[in-house]
Length: 165
Image (cartoon, rainbow, N blue to C red):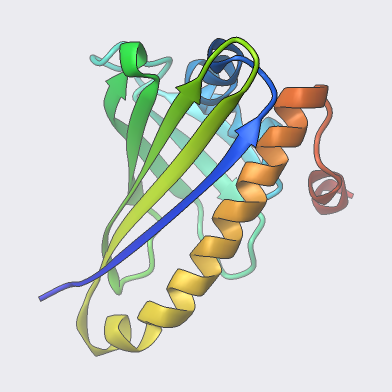
């Protein structure tokens, strides 16, 4: 039986829900432009859900992480919510991993929430559950901070500059 891991993090961004949706969903394939955790990203395929692409390929900057493929599995523009599943590049102990991004706000500010769900397998999954949860929480917090800076200023966070230099 898989070991369930759920991590949820949110941040308030001082831009409209539509502006943030533009960056996160309509430019889903361009996360590498602002996230320090992604050196390069590009979209592939045609989405039957109406998203900009079927999936994105990401080259992570985190040590020990492999190139990932993230496929959009739910796309709800009316609700300003989308979910992707990592379909390639996961460690062998991770059976499944999804991330749902939800945008709630108005024309002045938006709360964006990332909700990661992972299923870990076997003894190693059990052993790594707590360290992985801690590491993923840190990654989500940093990613949200980087998104906030990019959305509010049009500039990348200092972490992104330090990764690229």
